[in-house]
Image (cartoon, rainbow, N blue to C red; front, side, top):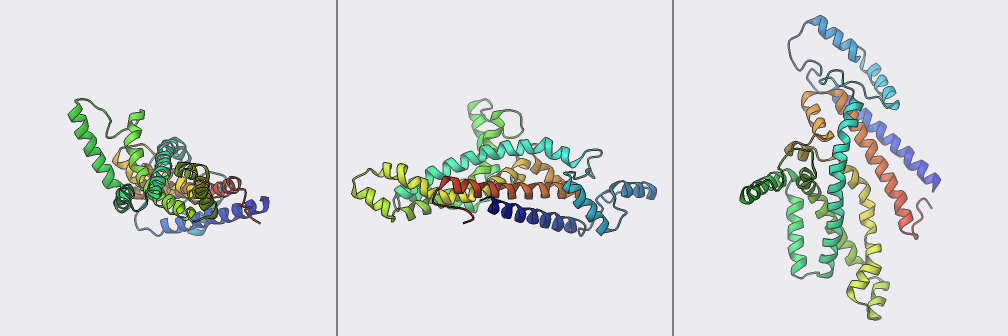
Length: 311
């Protein structure tokens, strides 16, 4: 297990290096001025800014400095937010994205397991058809459309009730979390519902399920006591990348709901060609994803004793 863990960590480090390298060269290939945003400025001021950010050095030298600073956990200063380090931006705003992502993940996982079980139990019957139609619609429609529709629905509800039942934007209280967390978790909920349904239907033909039916056990007991712990393994397999994706992937949702999360700053950095913020947050996201995948691989082996990862 220890040898396997070292291999995964090594491959993860290589992946993060590749992400950092690709992002660095991609950013320096984008046309535009990251410092001045095409504004006219005195040549001497421009020269001082280039020296301050190291942009007067050759690209290979800049790349070496970037990797060296990255290994020390230092992503440098933002080009657009003067005297503010990228590390400070990540530290201040990632907790907001993480809180929103965790709640969205709880909604997605609990809903996916419950709805997946319902569709499997009522296969080819009305509950199955209704849920699967909703799932297909949810997967097909982008989350920003659901965000706009949910805001419109809440506005109408608030107007009908005569007070603010739920705010449609902003941050600061638990009411502000409900709507964006639901919208952010919808796509993952639909995906996990389909995955759970397929996994449970596969368990129906297993020998232990047929034996349990022959013994006269109730459908609910077979599902709860025997099938779920086996059928949930594929869900656990994808939960690592899902955690990273849903925690760091709410860029549009954060913009629509005016949430001061890291995703919102990432989008602004792309619009403003803020190289250091883009590179720093991209490497941070990549490292976070790698760590989640490795952790899930470890947990996977502990959950199912039949699995010995690395053997």
